[in-house]
Amino acid sequence: MFVQQSAAFIFGMSLLTATFAMETPLTGLAAQSLQPNDNTVVVQKKITTIYPDALEGPFWKLESTSQTCHLSNHVLGIGRVFLKAEAGNVEEISLQPDPYRQQHRHVLVGTQAPAWKPKSPIRIFQSKEIAAGKHFVMPVSVTQLVAMIKQGKELVIDINRKWDANVRIQVPSVQVQKTIAAFYQCQSQLPALNYQQAQYKQLFYHPNQGTLDDKHKQWLDNLVEYLGADPRVKKILIDAHADASGNDLMNLMLSKKRALSIQRYLIEKEIPIEKIQIKYHGERYPVVSNKTRSGRDKNRRVEIKLWR
Image 1 (tube, rainbow, N blue to C red):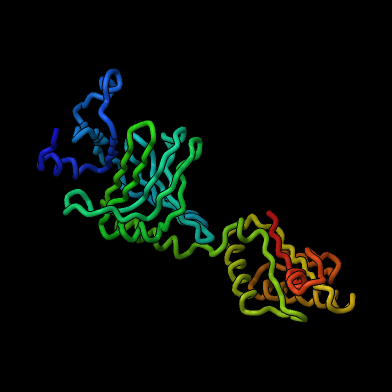
Image 2 (tube, rainbow, N blue to C red):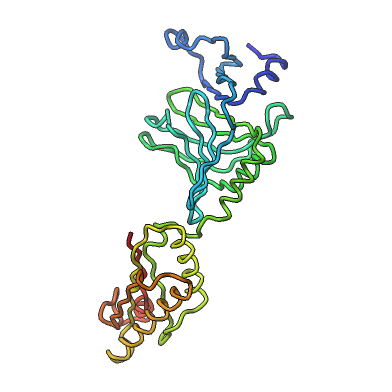
């Protein structure tokens, strides 16, 4: 049957909805098991379930640490939708718990105008196939999604399943301005690196170069920022190497110069000297053969390792 305009307006005001789309008519027991109830609307072989519209605390909630900014919204009857911005420029969306984890599904994430405004197409931000057994976690531009939510758009998640009804989750942007302002403040303070990115790094050098260039300093500045946010790091190992272009002693001294320049830079940035350990090996430990130019380029390096 067809839903009248007035019914669409009432349901459009609901806080959270999930839409189940059936591609073919149901018969027999399957049809009996999916009979409409008071909060179900059937439209042209589609079954739409409206989740309860009870208001429970803030619609979007911010949870933050020195390395994470998580916006979450409780979807009644399903779980919590998370928009995550984390150190290292990591941004993703997830559903916890994921009630559809045991099924293969195609997930689409986007935004659209709220139901009480003229209908508009969904602006798609990301879509992905998720295998059965895998949790719904998708990389997506959370920065752009939050900007659209701030403008009054609804977050839309379509979950299309092969054998079962499709699901649509719609999360309205209700009373979000203060929460989003706090999210932006949190995001602006996230370190440029996370632990996975900071725990091991190779800095490469030109022939006979012993000092830091601007690219080296930029990465070291990001490392210093990360170290300030992670007190669990107990040791920083600086392991310097050279290629085999010169004699053994010259290469040993060149690798020492590289290690000491990094140590001095970190100390100038107020990293405690007792946390820093340096080693220098000259040409003793090449990662590849020194017989080619590309090989020598890879061997002129300093490896920086963090230990918690």
